[in-house]
Image (tube, helix red, strand yellow):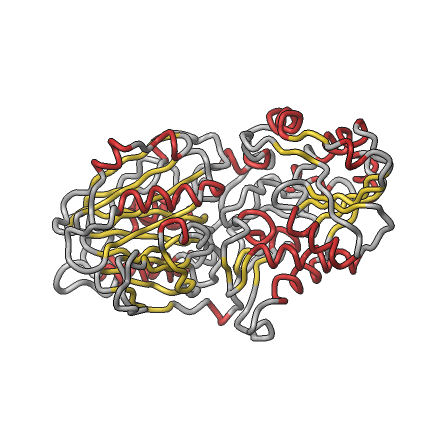
Length: 535
């Protein structure tokens, strides 16, 4: 779909939107929650793309590589998934397969064979609203005057309403309330400077980025190439990898069978790929059969600092992923070390709530010289309680998720490390489980600061009312959950731990979004916040 209005009108419409980006108000009633808002569904997702190098048709099974890449990103969403592939020879059609549920239930040998192609993109998703429907499965595919376009998105736009009004005013219909579809349709509109000979996709992407500064990592496929896009603040992660030949007789390190782009690097080794680098904040990269090149880098408004989501380190990312030149596991371990320095306590053993609290627990144990021991046995076939849809299911989930190793805890004073407390529904039943197993004392240490503010950039932290840290301080919360004590890592300590292993940690370019901890958002907020009018 391309713009049919005169070019002057198109330019004016785009210019008006650029101004509105800083002024947009989202209307919300006082009792409204984020799950009820009319657009911009919040989700934490994973995106993945692959393109074969050299001559086509390729020997690289692109669909299978993408499927395995999505399996490695399954922790980022278990609600739905999809893969779109292309032979790269015709702009008119793509091969598409999407569905609800886990990746292993959506894809099989038969539909992977039907997805044969030389390039493709994939997406795995979960939503935080009731819109858990197949119509919201990604990647989104639209058929434009210049051929098919496929888009997969991780993040959430902060100015959804103004962008939606602009797209609708151009006569474009929207079939969902997803801002991911909105991005897809917005890319189909001509940029204000016009296009002389066919679509200028980099110009369209660049203008979208200027209109929507937060928050997204995108993979976009058109014809024979894939574009990777990261918002100017670098809020959501995105990285690049190289598929290396299995038998490289020439020892040519530059030789590649293909290229991949992913939310995280954790799946690269399993598909025979090597980590190359992160996509820089504001960068547009182009992946073709010849390789990867930078198309442009969009600067942040008013030269504001970078704002990579610090919660990726705390909770979401897989521990073997690499962000900012360091492994997530190492950062989590350093959080434990800093926590031991900030809040020492006399105890017999240190342990963790598996599994994201384990690295921090090892760090705490090393720093405090108190031995580490496992005290909870985890049922690995139960999903994360954090992303289940209701409080009741979260509470029920704890009972079947853990068992206590009574021989390790009986009569012991225990330091139990967890990565975070959101609603406070799960830690109490865990402590009760340990009390029943004979533990003498339980001291809860949280390897992150208290969560106090909602996120408007793609993380499932809906409203202040649901965050336990806004209701109870650490002393009252310890009593509430049945612990002998409860302490958090400080914001300063978390930032110190995250930057500890970074070579450029003192550079002014470095920055992390701590909005959910401090209420300091990287960009202007979109008007009144749902459910939080009495701040």
